Length: 357
Image (cartoon, rainbow, N blue to C red):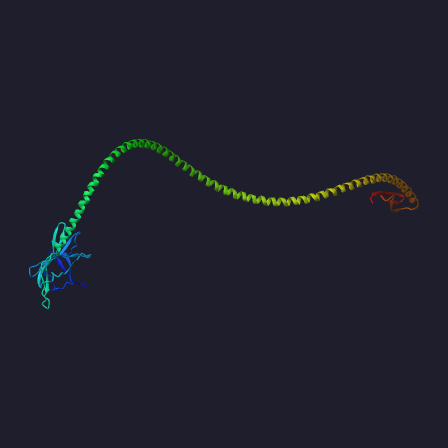
């Protein structure tokens, strides 16, 4: 387990900062927040950071440190960092593409081992070794890159030959492209003409669409009128149905009346025959009555004459007689005779009444 001490150092504020450790303790580390005028410094991408100092025995140390995700600097003590006891100056410096940037000095105090354990102190330039290794690695990368460049040159030469071939093919393609461009221009003119025709057709279609809209409105109105007419037709059909029902009833009654009329006609014909027979009988009876009347007139004359004779005879016998004599010559005629005899002066009144039956 590593035990870490946190400190803050600035690029300009030179206040004294001291860190204590024990001789030989390599399980200790520093985590340093670097500030500039109190604001934490954020290293640029690609920056390297190192820890350096000079021990009391004169040997120097210069080792690489790391940048954490929080942009702090972390340095774990090496054997040479804590090999010699005493107090010595240290700092943190950044190696950037545009130069080196150092913090102010802070002090590391290495306390001697309690048992007086001797330490072997020497120079330690881990940063230089790290830089050398990186340089060698870069050189190897450069050598590899050179080989890659040589291969790329060969490939470029081959590509140049291919490019020449391609250039010739491109020339031919250019001629074909020019020919195609002419044809395309002609096709463009044709397309423009067709576009004009399409625009004209579109205008006509729009006008037709407007007419269709108006026709649709009229159709909707006609549909409404048709619905109203349908309702009226349905009502008329209902009325017609009711009238047909009434007509059927009237037809039945007319048929019944026709039957009754036919029966009445038969009865009337029968009555007509009977009336004719009665008329004939009446005519015959009238003739008989006419004859009887003539006979009655003759009898009346005779009766009057007899009455006159009777009056005269009575007047001789009696001085005055009042009386009424009913003369019935037959069943059809009756005569009433009134007479008065007074002082030998007769007065006679005869009336005739004819009664049938």
